[in-house]
Length: 364
Ligand SMILES: [Zn+2]
Ligand SMILES: [Zn+2]
Image 1 (spheres, rainbow, N blue to C red):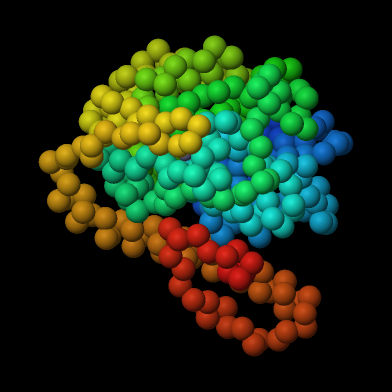
Image 2 (cartoon, protein in one colour; image 1 turned 90 degrees about the vertical axis):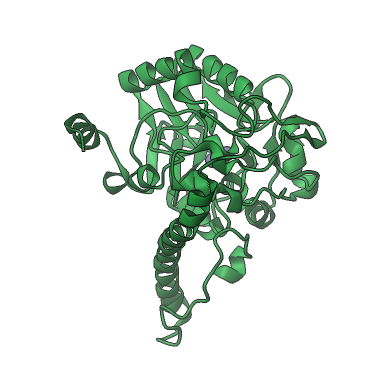
Protein backbone atom coordinates (compact mmCIF):
# COMPACT_ATOMS: atom_id res chain seq x y z
CA UNK A 1 0.00 0.00 0.00
CA UNK A 2 1.48 3.40 -0.95
CA UNK A 3 2.81 5.38 2.00
CA UNK A 4 0.70 8.46 1.25
CA UNK A 5 -2.43 6.35 1.35
CA UNK A 6 -1.42 4.92 4.72
CA UNK A 7 -0.85 8.44 6.02
CA UNK A 8 -4.24 9.43 4.68
CA UNK A 9 -5.88 6.60 6.58
CA UNK A 10 -4.05 7.52 9.77
CA UNK A 11 -4.91 11.18 9.50
CA UNK A 12 -8.61 10.94 8.75
CA UNK A 13 -11.46 9.47 10.76
CA UNK A 14 -12.76 6.06 9.74
CA UNK A 15 -15.36 3.53 10.88
CA UNK A 16 -13.18 2.33 13.74
CA UNK A 17 -12.64 5.82 15.15
CA UNK A 18 -16.16 7.22 14.82
CA UNK A 19 -19.37 6.24 16.60
CA UNK A 20 -22.47 5.32 14.60
CA UNK A 21 -24.33 8.29 16.09
CA UNK A 22 -22.25 11.44 15.73
CA UNK A 23 -22.51 15.20 16.07
CA UNK A 24 -22.24 17.05 12.76
CA UNK A 25 -23.00 20.69 13.63
CA UNK A 26 -25.22 22.46 16.17
CA UNK A 27 -28.63 20.77 16.01
CA UNK A 28 -27.46 18.22 13.41
CA UNK A 29 -26.52 14.59 14.09
CA UNK A 30 -25.71 11.72 11.71
CA UNK A 31 -26.58 8.09 12.28
CA UNK A 32 -24.59 5.50 10.33
CA UNK A 33 -26.76 2.53 9.38
CA UNK A 34 -24.31 -0.15 8.11
CA UNK A 35 -23.26 1.72 4.95
CA UNK A 36 -25.69 4.64 4.70
CA UNK A 37 -26.27 7.76 6.79
CA UNK A 38 -29.44 9.47 7.95
CA UNK A 39 -29.77 12.68 9.93
CA UNK A 40 -31.57 14.23 12.87
CA UNK A 41 -31.99 17.99 12.48
CA UNK A 42 -33.42 20.20 15.19
CA UNK A 43 -35.01 23.59 14.58
CA UNK A 44 -32.48 25.23 16.89
CA UNK A 45 -29.56 23.48 18.59
CA UNK A 46 -31.18 22.88 21.96
CA UNK A 47 -34.87 23.44 21.45
CA UNK A 48 -37.84 23.11 19.18
CA UNK A 49 -39.09 20.34 16.93
CA UNK A 50 -36.78 18.08 14.95
CA UNK A 51 -37.03 16.24 11.66
CA UNK A 52 -35.56 13.02 10.37
CA UNK A 53 -33.71 13.37 7.05
CA UNK A 54 -33.85 10.00 5.24
CA UNK A 55 -34.82 6.69 6.76
CA UNK A 56 -32.00 4.16 6.33
CA UNK A 57 -32.04 0.55 5.25
CA UNK A 58 -34.93 -1.89 5.46
CA UNK A 59 -35.02 -3.14 9.05
CA UNK A 60 -33.50 0.03 10.56
CA UNK A 61 -36.63 1.44 12.24
CA UNK A 62 -35.75 0.26 15.76
CA UNK A 63 -32.17 1.55 15.50
CA UNK A 64 -33.40 4.93 14.26
CA UNK A 65 -36.02 5.24 16.99
CA UNK A 66 -33.43 4.29 19.60
CA UNK A 67 -31.02 6.97 18.32
CA UNK A 68 -33.84 9.53 18.33
CA UNK A 69 -34.60 8.71 21.96
CA UNK A 70 -30.90 8.97 22.83
CA UNK A 71 -30.85 12.49 21.41
CA UNK A 72 -34.29 13.80 22.32
CA UNK A 73 -35.63 11.63 25.15
CA UNK A 74 -38.03 8.74 25.59
CA UNK A 75 -40.85 8.57 23.07
CA UNK A 76 -39.19 11.22 20.87
CA UNK A 77 -41.12 11.81 17.68
CA UNK A 78 -40.14 14.05 14.76
CA UNK A 79 -42.34 16.73 13.26
CA UNK A 80 -41.70 15.27 9.79
CA UNK A 81 -39.52 12.94 7.75
CA UNK A 82 -37.80 14.73 4.87
CA UNK A 83 -36.19 12.78 2.06
CA UNK A 84 -33.14 13.59 -0.04
CA UNK A 85 -34.32 10.78 -2.33
CA UNK A 86 -36.05 7.43 -2.13
CA UNK A 87 -33.44 4.75 -2.90
CA UNK A 88 -33.85 1.58 -0.82
CA UNK A 89 -30.94 2.47 1.46
CA UNK A 90 -32.43 5.89 2.27
CA UNK A 91 -36.12 4.94 2.44
CA UNK A 92 -35.91 1.35 3.70
CA UNK A 93 -37.54 2.04 7.06
CA UNK A 94 -39.64 4.96 5.83
CA UNK A 95 -43.03 3.25 5.71
CA UNK A 96 -42.62 1.75 9.18
CA UNK A 97 -41.39 4.98 10.77
CA UNK A 98 -43.94 7.26 9.08
CA UNK A 99 -46.72 4.98 10.28
CA UNK A 100 -45.31 4.52 13.78
CA UNK A 101 -44.81 8.22 14.32
CA UNK A 102 -47.78 9.22 12.16
CA UNK A 103 -45.88 12.10 10.56
CA UNK A 104 -45.82 13.71 7.11
CA UNK A 105 -43.13 12.76 4.60
CA UNK A 106 -41.69 15.50 2.38
CA UNK A 107 -39.80 15.06 -0.88
CA UNK A 108 -39.29 16.85 -4.17
CA UNK A 109 -42.15 16.73 -6.67
CA UNK A 110 -40.04 14.58 -9.05
CA UNK A 111 -39.24 12.08 -6.29
CA UNK A 112 -42.89 11.49 -5.40
CA UNK A 113 -43.51 8.61 -7.85
CA UNK A 114 -40.94 6.46 -6.01
CA UNK A 115 -42.49 7.12 -2.59
CA UNK A 116 -46.13 6.74 -3.57
CA UNK A 117 -46.03 3.45 -5.44
CA UNK A 118 -46.24 4.96 -8.92
CA UNK A 119 -42.89 3.99 -10.44
CA UNK A 120 -39.76 1.95 -9.87
CA UNK A 121 -36.41 3.69 -10.26
CA UNK A 122 -34.39 3.17 -13.44
CA UNK A 123 -32.45 -0.10 -13.08
CA UNK A 124 -29.07 0.15 -11.32
CA UNK A 125 -26.04 -0.33 -13.55
CA UNK A 126 -23.59 -2.99 -12.31
CA UNK A 127 -21.25 -2.34 -15.26
CA UNK A 128 -19.91 1.00 -13.97
CA UNK A 129 -17.00 -0.62 -12.11
CA UNK A 130 -15.32 0.50 -8.91
CA UNK A 131 -15.86 -2.53 -6.70
CA UNK A 132 -18.22 -5.00 -5.12
CA UNK A 133 -20.90 -2.52 -4.06
CA UNK A 134 -21.31 -1.65 -7.75
CA UNK A 135 -21.12 -5.27 -8.97
CA UNK A 136 -23.88 -6.27 -6.56
CA UNK A 137 -26.13 -3.37 -7.49
CA UNK A 138 -28.21 -5.48 -9.86
CA UNK A 139 -29.56 -7.13 -6.72
CA UNK A 140 -30.55 -3.90 -4.99
CA UNK A 141 -34.28 -3.13 -4.75
CA UNK A 142 -35.54 -0.40 -7.05
CA UNK A 143 -39.24 -0.78 -6.29
CA UNK A 144 -41.24 2.22 -5.09
CA UNK A 145 -42.23 2.75 -1.47
CA UNK A 146 -45.77 3.62 -0.54
CA UNK A 147 -46.37 6.22 2.13
CA UNK A 148 -49.79 7.14 0.73
CA UNK A 149 -51.41 10.39 1.84
CA UNK A 150 -48.53 11.13 4.23
CA UNK A 151 -46.43 12.14 1.19
CA UNK A 152 -46.15 15.89 0.55
CA UNK A 153 -44.15 17.91 -1.95
CA UNK A 154 -41.49 20.22 -0.56
CA UNK A 155 -42.63 23.87 -0.75
CA UNK A 156 -41.84 25.47 -4.11
CA UNK A 157 -40.15 28.45 -2.44
CA UNK A 158 -37.16 26.40 -1.24
CA UNK A 159 -38.13 26.50 2.42
CA UNK A 160 -37.86 23.36 4.53
CA UNK A 161 -40.83 22.43 6.74
CA UNK A 162 -40.05 22.89 10.46
CA UNK A 163 -36.54 24.20 9.72
CA UNK A 164 -36.74 27.93 8.96
CA UNK A 165 -32.95 28.35 8.80
CA UNK A 166 -32.61 25.73 6.08
CA UNK A 167 -33.45 25.65 2.41
CA UNK A 168 -33.61 22.78 -0.03
CA UNK A 169 -31.64 22.74 -3.28
CA UNK A 170 -32.70 20.60 -6.23
CA UNK A 171 -29.70 18.40 -7.05
CA UNK A 172 -30.91 15.92 -9.69
CA UNK A 173 -28.79 13.39 -11.55
CA UNK A 174 -28.43 10.64 -8.98
CA UNK A 175 -32.24 10.55 -9.02
CA UNK A 176 -34.65 12.93 -10.77
CA UNK A 177 -36.01 14.54 -7.59
CA UNK A 178 -32.89 14.41 -5.46
CA UNK A 179 -32.49 17.36 -3.07
CA UNK A 180 -29.81 18.63 -0.70
CA UNK A 181 -30.32 20.81 2.38
CA UNK A 182 -28.27 23.89 3.26
CA UNK A 183 -28.08 26.12 6.33
CA UNK A 184 -26.57 29.41 5.24
CA UNK A 185 -25.74 30.73 8.74
CA UNK A 186 -22.93 28.22 9.30
CA UNK A 187 -22.79 26.72 5.79
CA UNK A 188 -23.83 23.24 6.79
CA UNK A 189 -24.78 21.01 3.87
CA UNK A 190 -26.67 17.72 3.90
CA UNK A 191 -25.95 16.52 0.39
CA UNK A 192 -27.64 13.11 0.26
CA UNK A 193 -26.05 11.24 -2.64
CA UNK A 194 -25.41 14.29 -4.86
CA UNK A 195 -21.81 13.66 -3.83
CA UNK A 196 -20.55 11.42 -1.05
CA UNK A 197 -17.54 11.24 1.25
CA UNK A 198 -16.41 7.69 0.62
CA UNK A 199 -15.89 5.57 -2.47
CA UNK A 200 -19.33 3.98 -2.35
CA UNK A 201 -18.68 1.55 -5.21
CA UNK A 202 -15.96 -0.23 -3.22
CA UNK A 203 -16.93 -2.60 -0.40
CA UNK A 204 -13.49 -2.16 1.20
CA UNK A 205 -13.71 1.64 1.22
CA UNK A 206 -17.27 1.43 2.53
CA UNK A 207 -16.28 -1.01 5.25
CA UNK A 208 -13.43 1.24 6.40
CA UNK A 209 -15.52 4.38 5.74
CA UNK A 210 -12.41 5.82 4.07
CA UNK A 211 -13.07 9.55 4.05
CA UNK A 212 -12.70 11.39 0.73
CA UNK A 213 -15.02 13.29 -1.59
CA UNK A 214 -16.47 11.27 -4.48
CA UNK A 215 -19.21 11.80 -7.03
CA UNK A 216 -22.63 10.23 -6.55
CA UNK A 217 -22.71 6.41 -6.24
CA UNK A 218 -22.16 5.40 -9.86
CA UNK A 219 -24.39 2.33 -10.01
CA UNK A 220 -27.58 4.26 -9.19
CA UNK A 221 -26.86 7.55 -11.00
CA UNK A 222 -29.06 7.77 -14.08
CA UNK A 223 -28.28 11.24 -15.49
CA UNK A 224 -24.59 12.21 -15.43
CA UNK A 225 -24.96 15.65 -16.96
CA UNK A 226 -27.49 16.65 -14.32
CA UNK A 227 -25.27 15.07 -11.65
CA UNK A 228 -22.35 17.26 -12.74
CA UNK A 229 -24.46 20.41 -12.66
CA UNK A 230 -25.68 19.49 -9.18
CA UNK A 231 -22.13 19.10 -7.87
CA UNK A 232 -21.20 22.46 -9.43
CA UNK A 233 -24.20 24.03 -7.71
CA UNK A 234 -23.21 22.58 -4.32
CA UNK A 235 -19.55 23.58 -4.70
CA UNK A 236 -20.69 27.17 -5.29
CA UNK A 237 -22.33 27.12 -1.86
CA UNK A 238 -18.84 26.62 -0.40
CA UNK A 239 -20.05 24.43 2.46
CA UNK A 240 -18.04 24.47 5.68
CA UNK A 241 -19.43 21.05 6.64
CA UNK A 242 -20.83 18.37 4.36
CA UNK A 243 -22.78 15.41 5.67
CA UNK A 244 -23.57 13.01 2.84
CA UNK A 245 -25.56 9.83 2.37
CA UNK A 246 -22.44 7.69 2.53
CA UNK A 247 -19.18 8.30 4.37
CA UNK A 248 -18.11 10.29 7.40
CA UNK A 249 -19.02 14.01 7.39
CA UNK A 250 -16.22 16.26 6.12
CA UNK A 251 -15.39 19.87 6.91
CA UNK A 252 -12.90 22.67 6.41
CA UNK A 253 -10.05 22.83 3.94
CA UNK A 254 -10.10 19.16 2.94
CA UNK A 255 -13.80 19.38 2.03
CA UNK A 256 -13.37 22.65 0.17
CA UNK A 257 -10.40 21.43 -1.84
CA UNK A 258 -11.83 18.03 -2.77
CA UNK A 259 -15.30 19.34 -3.62
CA UNK A 260 -13.78 22.04 -5.86
CA UNK A 261 -11.67 19.40 -7.56
CA UNK A 262 -14.70 17.18 -8.08
CA UNK A 263 -16.70 20.04 -9.58
CA UNK A 264 -13.86 21.07 -11.90
CA UNK A 265 -12.91 17.57 -13.04
CA UNK A 266 -16.24 15.80 -12.73
CA UNK A 267 -15.90 13.89 -16.01
CA UNK A 268 -12.59 12.30 -15.01
CA UNK A 269 -13.30 11.84 -11.31
CA UNK A 270 -16.96 10.89 -11.18
CA UNK A 271 -18.38 9.70 -14.49
CA UNK A 272 -17.69 6.01 -15.18
CA UNK A 273 -15.67 5.15 -18.27
CA UNK A 274 -18.59 3.05 -19.45
CA UNK A 275 -22.09 2.38 -18.34
CA UNK A 276 -25.74 2.35 -19.23
CA UNK A 277 -26.41 6.02 -18.44
CA UNK A 278 -23.09 7.58 -19.50
CA UNK A 279 -24.14 8.68 -22.98
CA UNK A 280 -27.88 8.76 -22.49
CA UNK A 281 -29.82 9.52 -19.31
CA UNK A 282 -32.94 7.84 -18.04
CA UNK A 283 -35.87 10.19 -18.55
CA UNK A 284 -38.48 10.75 -15.88
CA UNK A 285 -41.34 13.09 -15.01
CA UNK A 286 -43.88 13.59 -12.21
CA UNK A 287 -45.30 10.12 -12.85
CA UNK A 288 -41.94 8.36 -12.79
CA UNK A 289 -39.61 6.81 -15.34
CA UNK A 290 -40.46 7.57 -18.97
CA UNK A 291 -37.60 5.80 -20.74
CA UNK A 292 -34.26 4.14 -20.03
CA UNK A 293 -31.39 3.40 -22.41
CA UNK A 294 -30.67 -0.28 -23.17
CA UNK A 295 -28.37 -2.18 -20.76
CA UNK A 296 -24.65 -1.63 -21.32
CA UNK A 297 -22.64 -4.65 -22.38
CA UNK A 298 -19.48 -5.25 -20.45
CA UNK A 299 -16.63 -7.54 -21.52
CA UNK A 300 -15.97 -8.34 -17.87
CA UNK A 301 -19.51 -9.51 -17.22
CA UNK A 302 -18.61 -13.22 -16.77
CA UNK A 303 -15.99 -12.24 -14.17
CA UNK A 304 -18.45 -9.98 -12.46
CA UNK A 305 -21.07 -12.71 -12.27
CA UNK A 306 -18.42 -15.10 -10.94
CA UNK A 307 -17.42 -12.60 -8.29
CA UNK A 308 -20.99 -11.81 -7.32
CA UNK A 309 -21.57 -14.94 -5.30
CA UNK A 310 -18.43 -14.36 -3.23
CA UNK A 311 -19.02 -10.65 -2.66
CA UNK A 312 -22.71 -11.14 -1.92
CA UNK A 313 -21.71 -13.78 0.61
CA UNK A 314 -19.28 -11.42 2.34
CA UNK A 315 -21.86 -8.62 2.36
CA UNK A 316 -24.53 -10.93 3.71
CA UNK A 317 -22.18 -12.13 6.45
CA UNK A 318 -21.40 -8.57 7.57
CA UNK A 319 -25.06 -7.64 7.45
CA UNK A 320 -26.22 -10.63 9.46
CA UNK A 321 -23.48 -10.17 12.05
CA UNK A 322 -24.53 -6.55 12.58
CA UNK A 323 -28.20 -7.44 12.78
CA UNK A 324 -27.47 -10.24 15.23
CA UNK A 325 -25.45 -7.89 17.43
CA UNK A 326 -28.26 -5.35 17.34
CA UNK A 327 -30.82 -8.00 18.10
CA UNK A 328 -28.78 -9.44 20.91
CA UNK A 329 -28.73 -6.02 22.54
CA UNK A 330 -32.45 -5.77 21.98
CA UNK A 331 -33.01 -9.23 23.43
CA UNK A 332 -31.01 -8.25 26.49
CA UNK A 333 -33.18 -5.16 26.91
CA UNK A 334 -36.35 -7.16 26.32
CA UNK A 335 -35.28 -9.70 28.86
CA UNK A 336 -34.75 -7.02 31.44
CA UNK A 337 -38.01 -5.32 30.62
CA UNK A 338 -40.21 -8.33 30.35
CA UNK A 339 -38.49 -10.61 32.84
CA UNK A 340 -37.88 -13.22 30.18
CA UNK A 341 -34.97 -15.46 31.07
CA UNK A 342 -32.83 -17.37 28.62
CA UNK A 343 -35.77 -18.50 26.57
CA UNK A 344 -34.47 -16.97 23.32
CA UNK A 345 -31.03 -18.22 22.30
CA UNK A 346 -29.12 -15.29 20.84
CA UNK A 347 -28.39 -17.14 17.60
CA UNK A 348 -31.86 -18.49 16.98
CA UNK A 349 -33.08 -15.75 14.66
CA UNK A 350 -34.10 -16.66 11.14
CA UNK A 351 -31.78 -15.62 8.34
CA UNK A 352 -32.81 -12.47 6.55
CA UNK A 353 -32.42 -11.55 2.92
CA UNK A 354 -30.87 -8.07 3.19
CA UNK A 355 -32.33 -7.00 -0.12
CA UNK A 356 -35.93 -7.76 0.74
CA UNK A 357 -37.77 -5.25 2.92
CA UNK A 358 -39.04 -6.90 6.06
CA UNK A 359 -41.55 -5.96 8.66
CA UNK A 360 -39.33 -4.16 11.13
CA UNK A 361 -41.60 -4.73 14.06
CA UNK A 362 -41.72 -8.46 13.43
CA UNK A 363 -38.01 -8.49 12.61
CA UNK A 364 -37.17 -7.14 16.00
ZN1 LIG B 1 -28.99 6.95 -3.74
ZN1 LIG C 1 -27.30 6.18 -1.11
